[in-house]
Image 1 (tube, rainbow, N blue to C red):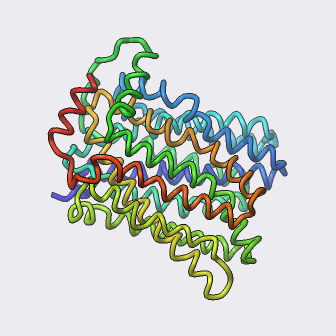
Image 2: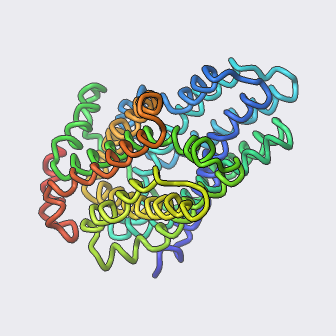
Image 3: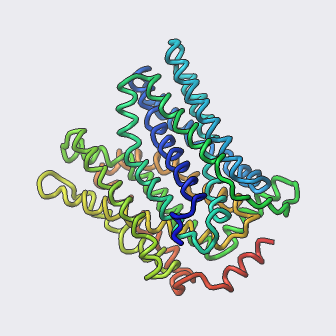
Length: 415
């Protein structure tokens, strides 16, 4: 039976689709509200963006320890309902004329906290829902809606905010509400977490970090993702400047060109399971990275006319490969980790690979000022491509699939 024929998975998939769409829209709509309704300054915009992501750096590690002490589905339900209330509060504030920058910052911080707990619990819940033998198939389906939401989210946010601030955030509140209600409908029992913890938060956080950094295979995967994310953050603030400032495209054209990445991500999600079965669940991790990500070195050559191909081809190819890589490496991490450690493992990985993003953004801005947009993009591309070295220099390069002894060794080291 295919995974999509399982009623419990279909319900979870529908819930995840609504939740991820709400998150993608919120990440664009809240800054758009600040820019269009409150005329926020550049400094305020940066502060607002930080408020939406800083919780991964501050709360990511303790969140993992807490999540390992509880069932994961109730945590996701609470996070969805909390985000629905937060977005409703923004709508009420807008209707009453009380929407100001302080309200946006407070709501942004609380949305970030809810997102931190939701995403760590979400990745930790999947193995108990679909079974470890269906992780690649399940993650492929879920990644397809994540890619679609990341593509559609900014466009939907722009339309909704243009209709009206209250209308825009109300739609997001409804998406979170229905996501939580769908999760309530899942009847498959979730195992009670093994209480292997010591009760000492610091010790439990340390055990999660040691599990990730002390296992050479997990360390290689986390190192490659952290390297990619840092240099992707270097690249991100420069891409729009390349398209609009350097190449001279209009804003609408630049948006259409960047949407090509979403199409690549959707194709990657649709084919990742097929590729993994034929290439190997482990081999595809480094192979997808090696074949696709280095193409971003072509981005600095982007221009008008036929030179637009230097943007379209690497942007599509890298997005495709990144999704195939992500499905494979997330499934690998879930398979290698015992249930009692899933929350701490996912939190530790998120802390390492997302906590570094703000520093990459600062580095990208400084590098762009120093060597110019195209030079900085080339440096970022080389850095992104270098992340594959973590994988090629590890035992992963010699594996096709996850050997049983590697899983047993990983479980043993988890205590």
